[in-house]
Image 1 (cartoon, rainbow, N blue to C red):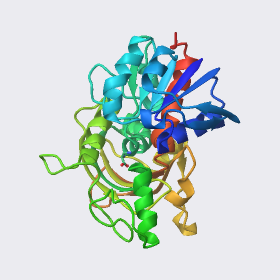
Image 2: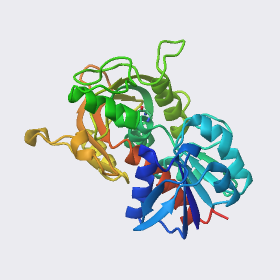
Image 3: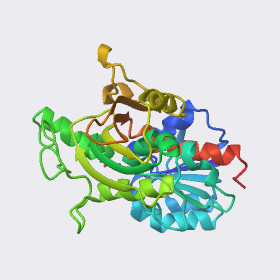
Image 4: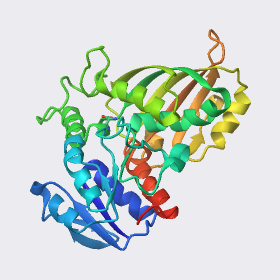
Length: 330
Ligand code: 2RA
């Protein structure tokens, strides 16, 4: 098994390498790939040094799988070239997510949709993954009608430059600004660009991707995505209305039984999910479960996950694991 990590020097690419190591992914050969400016740099994987190669070189070596975390433009240009060479691409960008010809996969929810001829597979947006993983078991039992979600997102979702901006502001030292306003001691209701309808691209990703993954174009969803000076992960407040009424004890059980979900919910002990605790973990943490007392069949929940892990690297590696385990790699 020859596997390429495209964007190997970026925050998510580095996390992909870490997850591959931790999960002992069955690969015989690793190709760390990056843009021309990083070619020749070295990365360490399983205590071995590897030299970063360029895109054309990687395509010529025809890896079995390529996990992309290199932005939409690079994916649009290079994923088809890898696919042409017989590689299966698992892409972390938004380039292919809403394409009708490409699958958008959270393995625990819709991994079984994958087929041998899938050559470019889309990894959903981090803020979408953690929400749908928690909602999927409840949707299957009670049928979702409407979702109102507000997110509280880590600067790591923007990348290393954003982390540097936060740290520089905190130390009151000059540095590159990637946000339009200061991020330390602040909250920015502005993730990605604003669209014609007043929503941001991040908010529209959550709306459109959720409907595609759950296979329900008729769910009403509205989202507000906010950036906070936080490191460990994304947090989300979700108000979910269902067609059927529910019992809170059964909701808790459904969540506890959902692979990849951990319920952290005992307010008598001040136990609830927090990014500080989710950091570096692969699970999606759910708490603050309570009925909306002013709206029927409606549940409030608080969902936290490390956006670099289950939100990106781990989900992508799990897709690669699913492909391998189900003989979908040829
Ligand atoms: C963010 N979800 O947090 C987006 C992309 N990673 O910025």
